Amino acid sequence: MALGRLGEAVHASVAALLDAHPEPWPDDVEPERVALSTLLARLDQPVPQVVAVGLVSRGKSSLLNALAGRPVFAVGPTHGITAWPHTLRSDWGGRPVDWVDTPGFDDAANPEREAMTWAAVRAADLVLWLTAGPPTPREVALWAELRRAEKPVVIVLHKQDRFPDWRPADLRAALGIGEDAAVTLVCSQTLPEPGPPAGRATLRVSPSHLADLHTLLDSLLSQPLVLVHLLVCQRRVLRGLAAARIAACQGTAGRLRGGYLLLRGITLGLGTPVLLGLALSVLLDLGYGRFLGRLYQLPFTSHGGELVWRQLGVNLGLVGLGWGLGLPWTDPGMGWGISAHLVSLALNLGGGWLLSARMAVYLQKGATWAVDGPDYHLHHLADALPFHSLLGRFCRALQVAE
Ligand SMILES: Nc1nc2c(ncn2[C@@H]2O[C@H](COP(=O)(O)OP(=O)(O)OP(=O)(O)O)[C@@H](O)[C@H]2O)c(=O)[nH]1
Ligand SMILES: [Mg+2]
Image (cartoon, rainbow, N blue to C red):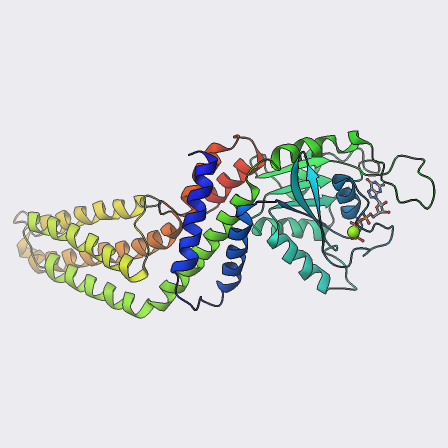
């Protein structure tokens, strides 16, 4: 699917979701709903938001000044110069981009700053995580937290003048980042070239110190970062709604399962002829799935259905096995005649119970895989993006990480 058409399809699907869902939204989904409507509005004229994060004094403000081409963000040698997030819009190869500067995560004297930085991360489409030299324990923990934020991340090995031997492979090893992880590492430094007259706010950074980052951003900022962000957010909303609906329907779902198992037991466990048993097994299993889907208001999708289909097949096998145990060649003298019915009953109830568990998991996981759903769109988007690009890898990794 072409990117333009994909964007339109995503827009329509998200708008329909926001319109269709009756108020009030579940409390835990409400923040994501607000984020989703903000992102939908941003999609009309997408300006990517790039946030720089890291511990204090890693050079976040210096780097953003260099990228924006203006000394706008305050810089200083002491910790905690940036007190709250600031945004600056500038031009990148003819396209607008919003650079967001943030306070350091580890400003112990001002713990509220960390929360502000996480809020900026949640709102951003791309994260530049600045590190300088070998990671501290806080940075190791931070990597795990950043991964959970579901953002495309560029790790910047900054201050290369001070740590010239500290290379991406070293940081990968220190943080345990595999080659297949959806993250890109680049080296940079923004130490101004010597010689600016004292007291004048100048910004003279050698372009070669930022060359790799420039090349990477040239490619990333021309890709649909806002669209991907919107899809990730829609995914969280749909999952939240599915979980809330499933929790609200627990009582009815339990009764539905009880009725299904009772019917399975009565119709299949009492010496039913084999062909009738096989037909009834399929009808009961599919009928149960259909009712459960309606109850949860979740679609039947192609995603993750294999386990359910396999269980359906296993259940047919169990009907055959139960019937076979009741045949005359089994030894009636050992009381196997009655036991055969009990075994057949147990087999059919067990198969039914397993199917009900698998059906619930399948429906919940499939909540985002409908034809106009976010996982379906992310799947197509990943195909449309260059295979090795950070964004393409990010889209694919989201679906593998399930
Ligand atoms: N050696 C070296 N110093 C740098 C580099 N980039 C920035 N600095 C210096 O590092 C110090 C901190 O830079 P900032 O840009 O203020 O760092 P920050 O991460 O925004 O700091 P906070 O806002 O306090 O969290 C300043 O003295 C910068 O001049 C670099 O590439 N190499
Ligand atoms: Mg700063």
